Each structure stands twice: as structure tokens, then as C-alpha cells.
Amino acid sequence: MHEPRTLRGRTGAIPSRTLDISAIEVRRYPGDRSALRALFEEAEDSAEQLDSYQQLGDVLVAVQDGVAVGHLQLIETAAQGEVELKRRMVVPTAAADIGNLRFYQRCRLRVEAVERDAFIPETGYPDPIEIDGIPLRDRVWLSQALARSPK
Image (cartoon, rainbow, N blue to C red; front, side, top):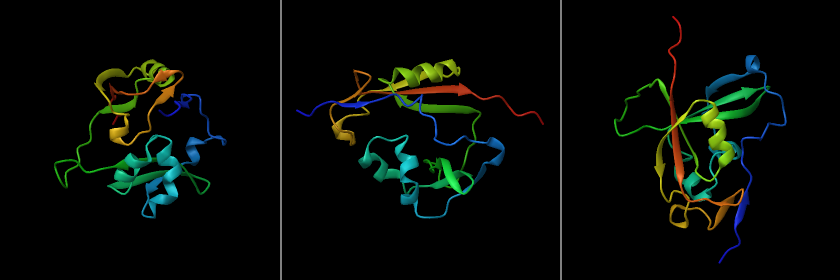
């Protein structure tokens, strides 16, 4: 049996640089995505899972002073060639990460679903994983309706 892998909640993680929103440019990223691996790894603990989707779809990057400080990956769904913009934000997070759950619920997101056994060896994650002493197994999906922009 492996020793538990302990992860700290990521809600307190602050970039080493101050982000100036007015200085951030968002653009399509056409380059080699391995250069963005560190950004992808901020949201994905399984190298196997990340390898399975990192090259899919399109990637937008937020750039400040020539440095990528964030990314968004857009992956085509079952309706090929069709993009549907929804007025709803959906966020997955680890059920064991109390800090993330507290943060998202304070931002008025509501629990939508629980995906059981999402973080197990059969899905590419090491076993066991603990976050703040809580075994990590399930993924929680939270959502929030987004307000329409004024015209």
C-alpha cells in the first residue's frame, strides 16, 4: 500500500506576480501545448488524465507582460462544429477539498452533481490521495447562472 499523497487546498494559492486585469490580453494559443503544461497541472492532478485531453480542442491564454498567466480549453462536444454559449458557469472540484468547496459556495455556486470515484487509480490518479486529511475519491460539479451583460 502506498503512503497517502497529501495535497493542500489551492484556494489560497496566489501567483507570485500581481495580476493587472487591464494589462491582460486573451488570445488563441496555436503553439506546442507542452509549454503550457504547468498551467494545465494547476487544475489536473493526474498526468494520465491530462495526457488524454491536453491536445484536444482550442486553447485561449491570458497573457500579461508576455507571460501566460491562465488558460481556457475549449473542447468540441457531441454536436460537431457547433458551439453553444451558455449563460451558466460549471466548475468541477475535488469533493475532499473543503477550501475549494467553501470558496465556490461563497461565490454563490451551487452543487449540481457528484461524480463518484473520479479520482481513483482506474481513472489515472495515484492511490491514496488525501487533501487536508480527507481521502480524495469523488468530484463535485458546481454551477451558477451568469447575468446577461447590459447592451
